[in-house]
Amino acid sequence: MKFSKLMSCAFAGAFTLAAQSATAATAATELNMYYPIAVGGALTKVVDGIVDDFEAQNPDIKVNAIYSGNYDDTRVRALSALNSGEPAQLAVMFSIDVYDLIDQDLITPYDDLLQGKEDQAWLADFYPALMENGQAEGKTWGIPFQRSTIVAYYNKDMFRAAGLDPEKPPTTWDELVEVGKKLTNDNTYGIMIPSTGYPYWMFQALAIQNGKKLMSDDGLTTYFDDPAVIDTLKFWKSLSEEHGIMPKGTVEWGTLRQAFLEGNTAMMWHSTGNLTAVKNAAKFDFGVAMLPGNVRLGSPTGGGNFYIFKDTTDEEKAAAMKLIKFMTSPEQAARWSIATGYMGVSKGAYETEALQEYTEQFPPALVARNQLEHAVAEFSTYETARVREA
Image (cartoon, rainbow, N blue to C red; front, side, top):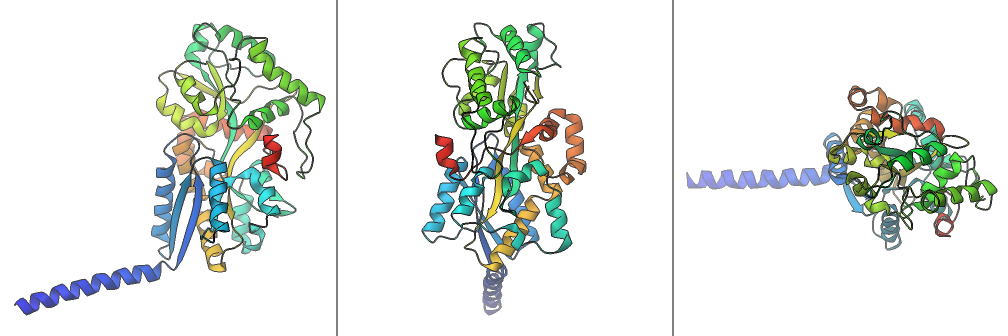
């Protein structure tokens, strides 16, 4: 009996080892995915959940999600891994990094990886405005995932208290100033537009609204000295210096959402990636609107794209494509949008039952997507980092 029991234990142990070996052998391809977690919400849990579902459907692929801070942190960490010989197959990095990544010969164009009509249909479903920052030199280098436009958040309760229609946020610069003055008092500013973190992004939005893009489509020329661009900077400064509806000095990107939630400002411009976090935390009635215009309406797109690194085996590139197609599928893109506030990056995402039901119950979730009609590519040039710093 003891012998029988010992044999049973031995068999069980051997079975466990065999199963573990089989699992290790099955997960033949391992991917390191670098991912930024700069904007609000428990993004790591959402990404981990999507990755878990992918691995369940693809037991032969193991995905290690490596989280960093903002987009710059993620680029530095991923490129440091490449330079030191550590494995790095793909990353979600700034959509505006595309020229620099091409220039350094670090990424693979998706054109070399697409196979057949199904892949072409997948690519064609992404919104064209979101694809602009990922396309250069006649090829597609980045696939949109964590994407946004700048939207205007506003406190409807404060609008009512000031005698303003809570369903009519400002649609022009003149209205912004007029409404901002009515909302400004000893405790609250009418508007806050962040000038740290991503100041070029907000400045670009204002320049677009004033009828001027900041860069050429080929990434070789900037228009900072254009009279319309100079007038744009004067207007931004006038909100605090002349009209007194915005604080003097800098407005911090990282603390602005909390300032809005605490009632320090009646309106703020921020990424749609903050939408779910604001929705969950706001103790007041709030609205979301497209940005106001002057010569025209407009916002730059923003956020991150999937890139596949060039120094990756064919098997790893194929596995990375599987992962990217899974994470950007309509169902997963809808899940991501609902959980975070970032937009669903494809037309198919908004045709899913889940996102249709969500946007019917919570219409502000459509604002960023609808603003794509007036959106342009985010500021991006060769030597982007140096130009942005300047």
